[in-house]
Length: 377
Image 1 (cartoon, rainbow, N blue to C red):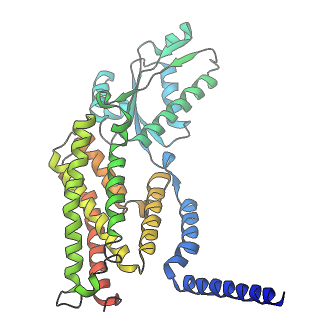
Image 2 (image 1 turned 90 degrees about the vertical axis):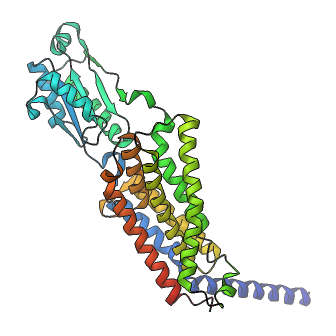
């Protein structure tokens, strides 16, 4: 019996010793402590300071009034002053045009960022409401920017409901069936392609590069040779960039010929913007690998950064941060090039932001690996 008790005491002592050892190891691991305690605070802060992405932006809405009646003007005023969404309404008088000219102008502007939708008040709009108790309301929405399209539709629904309530025309119906432009390419993949492509490139390249230094066992022996440390960084970035070339070409060709995604720009332009984005993903991944002492730490850093970037770009938006995130810049440039038909020169702000971030992390990688990281010495 005493032997059993002694055995239990020794076992308990060993267990407590192992617990202490594990806690000591964790407490010395700064990255693990950062993930455990700082990340929750960061996420809560971001959500608290940010804006809901579906309602965080603003958009211009054109209303073409062929009716020119008191009721049609009331309808326009309902959009201008009573909608709960952040939509700004413009009418033909703002451009010194007649209704026909204004409609043609709206058609031209719809695929650009200057307008998200336009509504046509048909010639017998007020008469239809008074006599027939219903009317048609043609609406054309630019589906390219999903969030702006969502805001526009919410504004249209809100204004039409308010219009009927204020005019006490509860039996009246305003029938509208939004027509999404461009019609010839509307499908789920077409809408998701810019975001999906940039997500795949970043996730794949960043994840594998987070292991390029911390998981490279022969590197210790290599650094005993006359090889300079900055040469290692350049070589690793170059190797992964070569792989990225093939990955980008494969994705773009598969989207175009496999699913019929149409690009309104030169293939080389779209390729180059994604290549700059790929470089961005690689240098950030190399940075995570450089500052990590284990493979687990580098994977945790990737996961943290990836989740935070998705959170900021898709759920909450803080302008001071979101404009410098690679995913935001690459997706915006993809949309402008592939869907809006802009040239590479017209998306220079996106290229500049991506280049600045890439250069920043490249310099940090060289400096850190050259002067601070001494584990391989």
